[in-house]
Length: 118
Image (cartoon, rainbow, N blue to C red; front, top):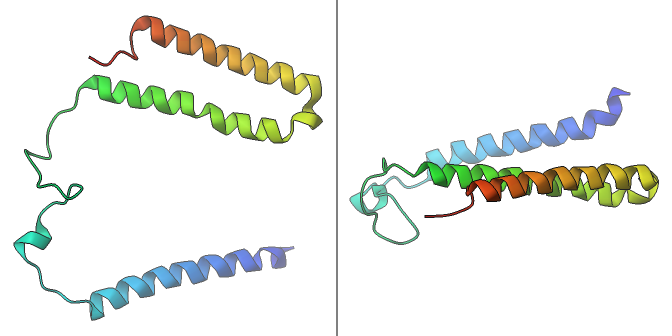
């Protein structure tokens, strides 16, 4: 039974060894010529302005969490769509309930004004 997992174990070992060998070889062989330009922070080709310790509005984090919350629904919709015929009416009712609960949450967040960017 464990023989079935041997190819997976071999793949993991090869991947880890490849990563380690790449890191070690690049540190041994690679050029080391630090300069102020190379050591400067890089932000999409633009010269950085201000400090990296800037505070973000709590609204930014709230929007990010809401995006993650409502984006996760796709993770549940995909397997349901694949197995829809096997699940039948029960699966349809369960997914309908899930969508309704998600929609109620969306309306609640919308009414509270959490999606307003000021």
